[in-house]
Image 1: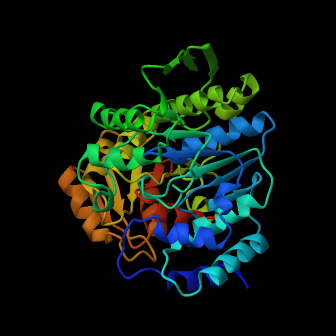
Image 2: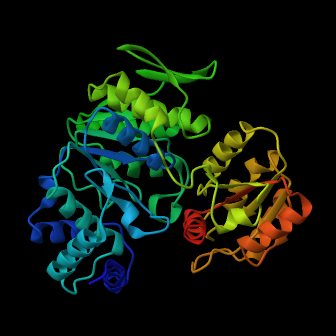
Image 3: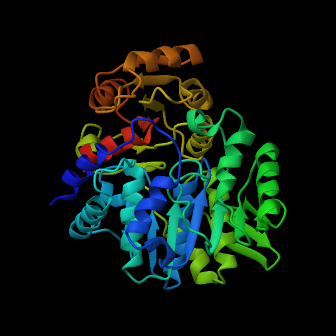
Length: 421
């Protein structure tokens, strides 16, 4: 049985009412023999922005020192298999199909969400394959996220928190931080990335409540860029390293979180340099260099980014400012659950011209017209495009040497990576 057929069937098990709870997870994991209790030591990562990039850098650092890693992330971009790294490689189709099939068989027809049952499949896979570490990225929130079933993680990590997913996590930064801080466990060790004061106060209160030991950015460790290098400092001394392979000031912060994590794990220079130089994370300021889309614009640059909230807009704007000067055009597609204006506003300093597109196959997509209307209100010169290909062709008519950024959603990014493969 192919994994995509099983995944399609699993969608039908979704509860009629969407609620965040661990009850369904604990029931199925118990029936599976509690694989979460026997997986390799867990590095559990929550936050609003930078979870995936931070995980990629931690994994690159661990692998550079010879460690073997399992890793779990979401959402996927082109194929579901991307969510599960099994002993250092994307899970094979036969393994994915077998683990999904086992979870489906054990679960029966009992309601469970798609994310929950696929997380169970990942944990089952991790329990049956040797590795040195398991990197688990939270899907949504933290306290009631399906990944939050590990009693004693080796280390927990909280990346910067900002406003997102208000319909599930709360309307204020403090409410959202409370959900994210739910991954802190009694007597665990935690690395805390840069936070606004309101969020940090909540995290520190939760840490005190459960007796977690925190190493906090700005208090226990520091990271900055100096003379084209990354400098990291903590109580163990100073590191002078290459800038991260991933572009942008926000990646300096993410690199600091990764380095603080690797320091706690007792790693050395080969690991630190590996984290900087070897990390790959698709659709985070990714340059597309070949494929059908690039053939439409042979003299242009085409970039792809999946950020989709206000904080991501600011981070993206700063990353763009680091590139050599070139006229920039934006192709934007977003979901109607996002703060579209908040995302677009920071990008206005980098480009005045925007093309709105709908995201193919996504029920919650903004229409191209809705996207354009918001963009005009923000201050862009904006036009509706039938699709990304049409937008690229129109841009090339104006400037064959353009820099084109396709952005606004991981779902749009995934669609682009499929098309351009």
